[in-house]
Length: 362
Image 1 (cartoon, rainbow, N blue to C red):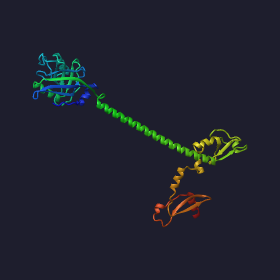
Image 2: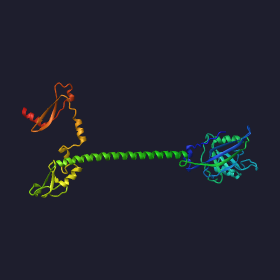
Image 3: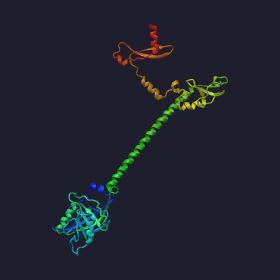
Image 4: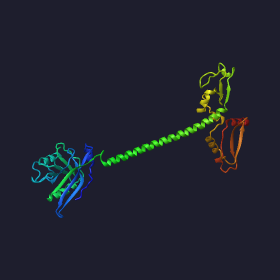
């Protein structure tokens, strides 16, 4: 007679149950095998205590109702001899409430009651509710196990049962739920830590790159500042006149003895005012002229980028320089023998040059 140690609960149980924790029951079933004359004992954690049942143990011989296996109806329900030791009622689910079954068995002196489930439920159980019968140990077992036991009882084989308190189960105390929650918590924690480490490392790398870039630009700015014109204002200079402009950084007028710096755009400032500004901004506060570009001061990365861009000139290119006092631009032209003229031809528009050519034609 096999007994299952795993209890299966249908979805309807979880939806209908208001209790989040239930207790399993440990069963020890022993009887005498009439063929071998040996005592057979079976153990399983295959019962569930009722919601209103005392969480206590019980023991005794199993007894079934006389007629109705559900244990419903008036007294007497069970046929027993007074010489029988403490006994446990074994009834089938159905026909009346759990409280009626429990009260009927308790009225006839049962030490506990075992309710087995109906057909078609295999070994599924439920957390039965019996608020009107809270004083006696009441458990439920599956239909498969219940039918095996009733078959032996109907054969006249005395069966002794010991009921003991098992383990708590439920969404928050069941072992599988604890494992699941532990693994989920570990995964979420590890993912959060990993994300935090990634973001922190990314920010550190960006900050380091930004600092290096700022350091290079400050070095270039220092080189550019050394090339700027610095002079001392003298009495009678235009900067000391009534219509002279003030320093755009400190908003103060220039006076004789002030040291000023002349930027590439022609704007002048106090030397002590403009140099800290140029180290950080590298542009004129008034017209935003970039002193690095104006003075031709470039960092190494820009030089490498420019050199790589123009390191491979197109082959067989004729360059014509159009000048009007100084070079204006260069126009590359392809020769008549270029095999792929569409790829190498470059058109540069010079409106002044075209207007001059039209005037000559006219």
